Image 1 (tube, rainbow, N blue to C red):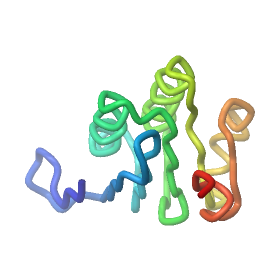
Image 2: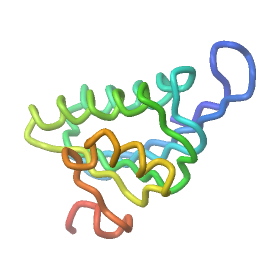
Image 3: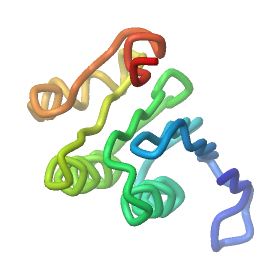
Amino acid sequence: MDREHIDSGQPARLRVEARTLDAESELLVPAGELDHHTAALLRTPLEAALDAGRSRLVVDCSALDFCDSTGLNVLLGARLRADAAGGGVHLVGMRPAVARVFRITGADAVFTLHETLATALPPG
């Protein structure tokens, strides 16, 4: 899913690309600012992947410039659903400003964090 506009008709501050990797895994690449106004742009493909039975969600955060509490809650909600389905959420390449939000809130302890996409992708 690559959406360029949000409901206000203004250019989106967040773009999200989603790609199915295999029957259990989805790769999501949010780019820009993940906040109250843009969170649905990430929530929608996360939920779609989970609804389709993909419980391993790899979120490449290397192009994510900002994440507020709403964005963090979107990822936490996806983590709960993925964990319940026997999977998990793998976060990759967080920039310092985004990593700080996770560190301050303690959320970094509940996600699987990876420095590179290669280490986060499913084996095979």
